[in-house]
Amino acid sequence: MNGSLPTIIMFVALIGLMYFMMIRPQKKQQQKRQEMMSNLKKGDAVITIGRLHGVIDSINNADHTVTLDCDGIFLTFEQSAIASVIPAKTNGGEIVEKSTQSTDTQSTEEVTEKNASEDDEKKS
Image: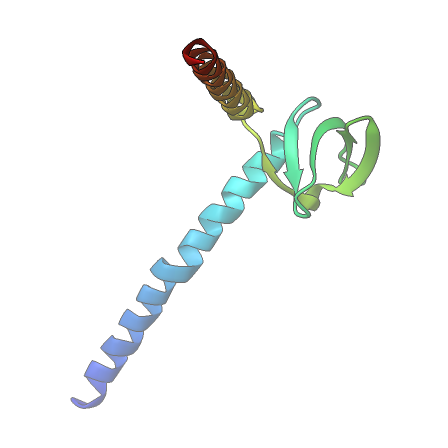
């Protein structure tokens, strides 16, 4: 009996470790996803599992489907096809800033080139 006690303790410890490393995080992830799905509403920007970006036009809870507006094209998906909801604050905010920066960089380069060409003309 003394030889089997450490084996039993090791087996119980392994099951406990497996629970905390695998099962518990998966349950938390499922709860988070279920909460996201229950909070879906018309007008939310979403990304599907196929990486299609769209805005929710309608939700049919009876059939578990959602209709997305993708630049004027209306597509119907299963609710389980929604991968994530895009937060409202980051909807294109970074893209606008990047395009503004590139425009500023281009205009600065154009002014520098114009000044350089004017200097060359003055020297001639």
